[in-house]
Image (cartoon, rainbow, N blue to C red; front, side, top):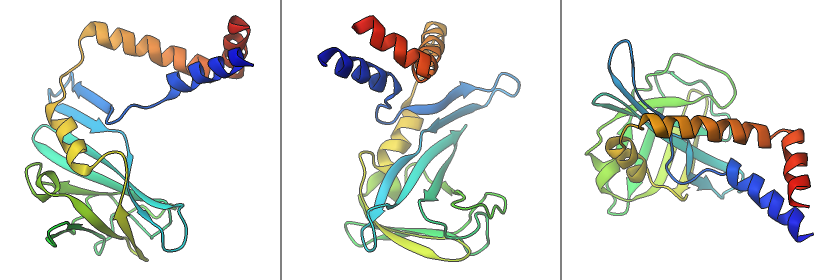
Amino acid sequence: MKKIILALTLVASTLGINAQHLETNEIDEFEGYLRRSTQAYQIGEDWTYSSDIYITAKVSRINDAYFITLKSSIDLGCAGADDNYIIFKFTDGTILKLTDDIYDINCAARASSCFRINPNGLLRTKTITDIKFAQSESYSTFKAEGKNTVSQLIERVETATLPTEAELKKGRRRARLTMFLATPLGILLALLFLI
């Protein structure tokens, strides 16, 4: 039984995500611009109706331009609509409202909205307490909660270094191993190896 638990832990650890990992970290080989983007992390929850209502954010950087992409776990309407906004309230009562959703109109359920941000502004220097996210049909309010803050995500895309060729190879090998271990055959072989 211990070996089975160990095998499942091994599989889970290869599939796990560490805090603030970058989804993209590269220099475009044709145009030479820097592209960095964190993975999406939960930054808030709405406990009014259910613990299943939350908001995720990811921060992206293209050269010197920074963006925050937000997605709610409930459908609030269309992304890219003129009236979409996000409001952040900070511990000192300061409020930051972003109103220019730069994504194209997308009315799929739970579509993401994207806003340009100042990497040295309030999101970097203050602590968020509350979030109000509105899209074309509705809005939801959230208490700031999550393992990562928006400030940490901004810092990650700002200070990350580009991977070396050896790190890229290691990452590709790890990705192939992770993909294999996620298959039924990979899980079976991992279990048989440990038994």
